[in-house]
Length: 234
Ligand SMILES: [Zn+2]
Image 1 (cartoon, helix red, strand yellow):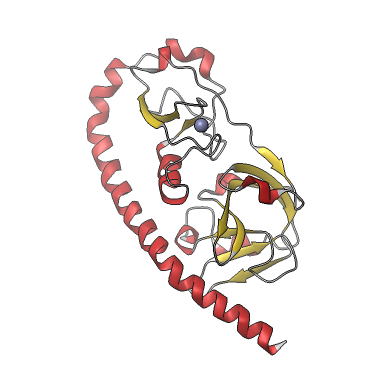
Image 2: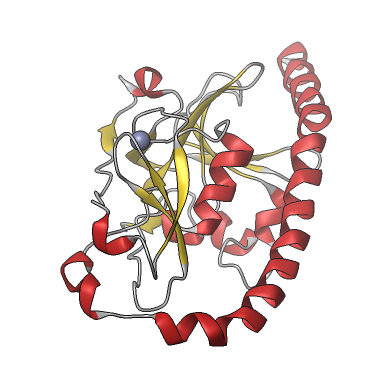
């Protein structure tokens, strides 16, 4: 028993070392994001003049391939699209792919994702939705690097030393069980993924839309970046 605990501690410590790189990345990108927002604001007035909603009327059901969130074509100025399977990404989701999926499409694995200008390109582009595969505890290992949907009960939460949460879908150690990982920078207040919310999910059934990764040390995990990717079922 004691050696088991020691084992987990060692593994968690290992994770802390590994994830420091990712942690810094999140912060950096957030800062970049702030700068970008400032820039977008100043550019917006001239962009808006060219904008025509009429050509997009039949595209209203298009959703972001990562979060499943509807893309509001009257609002979005820039989207990204996979040239191979035609699914689309909002800028935040594209950043997520860059950080977590080698900039590859979570639908088909292609590396050909390109920015498209809503104002110019949209009338000639075919846009498709990604229908995530519904995976279970029996088959999730077949979907590494894919965007999936999973429904399960959170049986417990484990915390790494630096504060990441693993919402465990199986009553097993961190490394062995299937889990949803929420990195600690996402838990800042006001973003919807606060610790109190995550803790409230224990013993509840949730539906997660997320990316399956296989961490070399910590095993299979679902990762997300937005509250919109979790639906509480009961
Ligand atoms: Zn694709």
